[in-house]
Amino acid sequence: MSSPALAALDAAALAYRVIRHGPVTSLAEAAAARGVAVPDVVKTIVVRRGEDDHLFVLTPGDRVVSWPKLRALLGVSRLSMPDAEAARAATGYERGTITPFGSTTAWPVVADERLRGREITLGAGEPGVAVAVDADAAVMWLGATVADVTDPEPAR
Image (cartoon, rainbow, N blue to C red; front, side):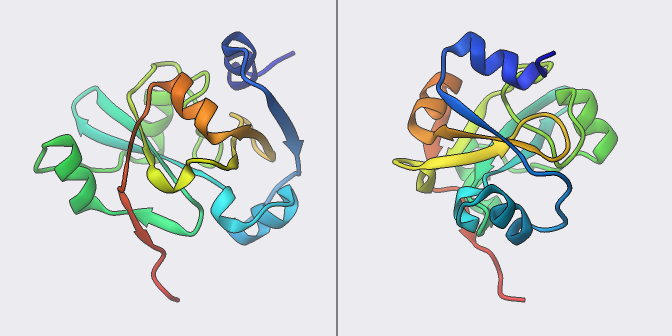
């Protein structure tokens, strides 16, 4: 039986490849398991603008959301990240599996401009499963706003 994410991709007629890799504990591990570079592991971040008002932000794996850039793009002074339970209520997915495809609500999507022109991998709605998809096709189908909304991952 298909997951909501895979069913949504099928309904969209987007070409994709399923990658079943099992549990991973880091982005680097996810990249290795998926056979891609870390920037091609796209993080789907759920952001809360207000009560029952969320959006998805798609970021390359080696970058983080720039809150000042995102607030400026959205024209708001405050954003937050919901806790795990609220994120699940907003999307139908557990953290680590969240994807805009097949979400229980079709929240707006903002995609970092660095995703363009590449094949990316995203969570597929269940642990240890990802999909590889053409970023430009996915962004277009999702109706995403494409902008510079990230900063480099801080050095550790």
